[in-house]
Image (cartoon, rainbow, N blue to C red; front, side):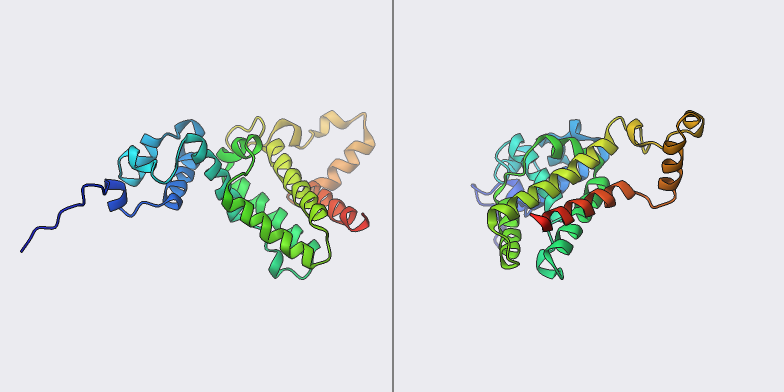
Amino acid sequence: MRKATMSPNRTRGQNAGLTRQAILQAALTLADRDGLKALSMRRIGQELGVEAMSLYQHVASKDALLDGLVEQIFTQAAPPLTEAASWQEGLREYARALLRVLLAHPNVIPLVVSRPAITPHNHRLMENALHTLQAAGLPPERALDMLYAVTGFVVGHVAILAAGRDGHTPARGMRAIPDQDLQQTPLLAQATRLRRSSGPDPRFDFALEAMLRGFDTL
């Protein structure tokens, strides 16, 4: 029997069934485990069991890899607008989904804060969302402003939560104010006590609802 041979122009990465999605998922797993500083083509190749050079057939550069990581976050939180009862509910669910995804991948938050989502796949996600919002009666330019506003609000909120985080400790600006620091400020003390008992992230819900109601008045 003739022994099978690999085609001369077929690389080890191709032989392993390597895809862009597999590379991005491995990069996200590596970033979750070891942080953004650990990201390199060599390390990702090790994760996938392929030569680093094989990756460049699917991801052109380190910048393209980082863009793809941002894409992964927004893909997981893609606006479920077509399934929502209203555009308000669709944007509400998108905001909450994006919050969950970002909190699930805290090491990637600085990348999302500093890097725009400019991949073709993300553009298609936005296009689909705009189609749905337009069908609900919203002009495309207004719908785009709303998408950017909701996204910016969620990313900014998560960035504040992540700032100065030590392990799972919230940022100093989001911690509860100790009671002993509130002895001379009774209204602040009252508001703080009530806020502690009204849910895990009441400020997020309050600001999101205010934003959605404000959209409805424009």
